[in-house]
Length: 215
Figure (spheres, rainbow, N blue to C red):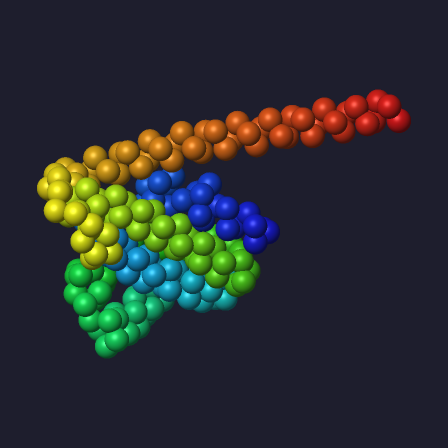
């Protein structure tokens, strides 16, 4: 699989948050602030890259009957490393992520990519898949965090913009409403992208047929 396709899938075509609708618990709970999205996104990206790479490296060694427990053990190792690093160097981010940081172990995005991609593809491709799936997750959470923080707190990345705020957007109902808006916008953009891609494909096909006919 080409690196370009892996990148497009992770960032857009198969975005884990907006297309696959995975990792919804941290998405809904942590997007009250943009920095939470960045912190959780980077943590998940780190775990995805290295767990994907190790699982791919061992894909012909791990028995199929115990693959899920093996995947979880590998993922848990990198989650533990992430927690230790954040607790040591970025304790404020670690505290803001709370219990959702250790729960990365059972995040459906990570287990899903291990099963669907890393267990079937080479190491480099699997690491790239982890990188771009993680970045796609981070971008979605950060954008939702910016949206909710501006409307719900009148600030962005902790910087106060104005005194006006709509408390609804930092409440659980506001999280669901925001998620629905983002999925709807993504669906419209993705549909337009598919139409444009099909039109280009049809034009290219007609051009090839015309060239063959002239020949």
